[in-house]
Structures are given as structure tokens and as C-alpha cells.
Length: 201
Image (cartoon, rainbow, N blue to C red):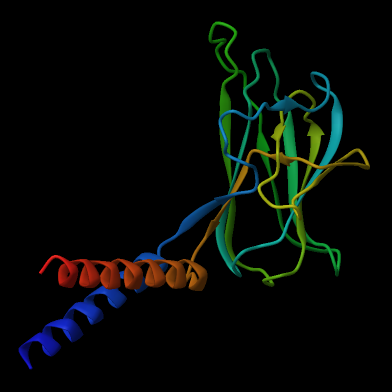
């Protein structure tokens, strides 16, 4: 009887722990994070461009979008306008701008500067397509590499490219997929340990 109670308590603790972990905010990259993949830079220095980064959200609630671009090594006061748009309705969900400032050269190394686009109170439709649009003198700023998902593509000045910018989306709320994966992994470990204990008894 005591063993049954112990198993029940352990199960409840594991499920509560998994539920808590699955409810934490998490960043998901739109690009493949394999360090061996080569990255390219779009456009020429100071070129006026319009860039659209497409994606399909993995969850409905997001809090911010992190975009990493090359830092400027020359004088500029350019502003980049951005907007989050739903593809189906062409509705602008949120928009804003950020300013590019001169950075200190670092011996020829490419330094990435991160900008955080505030997405507070933004709710997306899971499974629907969206894009983040950037407008301004953004040539030679956005680095691109292989996309993590096939739905993730970019359009530069009307030309589609099968790659992704260095963008991450921060999701909030409960992540069912993460919970299920961790739950199955926990069950596998418990069953494996139980079988091995009996085998070596």
C-alpha cells in the first residue's frame, strides 16, 4: 500500500514539474542554428530595401520578437520601420521602428546587434501564416541562413528566397507539444528503470 502511495506522489510531482516547465516562456528560432551552416548578408551597404520574413507560429501567444542584424561601422541615423502582418487578411497586427546607431569596429569581425520588437498583448492564430516586414536602408544588415521550417521564407524587394533571417520568437503560455514529449520521455525512463531493477534483482 505504501509503495502505491509513493508511486502516486512521484507521478503527481513529475506531472506538476512537467506542466510548470512546459508553461515557461521559450524562444523559437526561424533559422537553422547549426553552427556549420554558412550565412549570407542581403543587399549592398545602405541600400533601400523591403524585406518580409514569413513564419507560421507554433503557439498563439507571443511577447516579443528578437531580430539580430549586423552592427553599423559608419555614421548613420537611419530608422528601420517594421510591422507584423497576417497574410490571409493582410491586416497589420503591430508596427513600430528602431534606430540604427554606429558601432565600434572589432577587428573585421561581424558583430550582431539584437533588437527586441515588443509583442505584448499580441495573439496570433496558430497555423495561420504571418510575416514581419522591414523597410529602410537595410542593405548589408540582415544575415540569412537555412530556415528551420519549410514554411519560413523571406521576400526581398519582391523576390522570394528559401532562407530565414536571424529571428527568434518568444512564446508564452502552456506548450502542449513540449509537455507530451517530456511526459513520454519520463514514462520511458521510469519503465526502463523498473525493468532494469527487476532484471538485476
